[in-house]
Length: 159
Image (cartoon, rainbow, N blue to C red; front, top):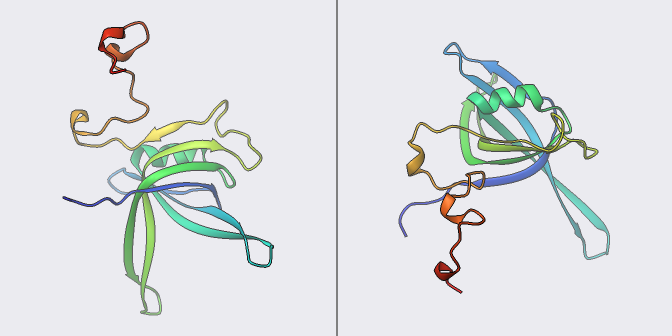
C-alpha cells in the first residue's frame, strides 16, 4: 500500500465564537473549539456522556465564512487533517497540542436546531491551488450530463 491517510470528520458544537485574525499578508485565520459527545451505558446501567474538545483551524475563505456565520453553540460538520504543534510557553515549558486544520465545513444549525445564516446549512470547502482535475470528486460536484436524469440509456446499465 502506497502512501497514508490523515483525515478527520467531526460533527460538534462550537464552545465559543471563532477568533479570527488577519496576517500581514492579508490571509485570514479562524480558530475555535468544538465539542463532540459520545454516550454509553456503563456496567451499572448508568448513562455516561464523554465529551471531547477539538481545536479547529480554518484559513482564507473558510475563516471568513466562520467569522460571518459561526457563533457559540452552532453545530458544524468539519473535514480536515490532524496537525501536531509544539511551542514553548511563558514559563519555558515545552508544550504540544493537536489542531484540526479544516478543508471543508458545513453549517448544520444551532444548539436548538436553528440554522446558522438562514434556511438550511451551508457547505464550504477550502480552495486548493491544485488543478481541479487532479482532485477526487466531491459530493457537491454536479452530476455529469451522461448520468443526469433522462440521459441514461438502459442498454448501458450493468444490471
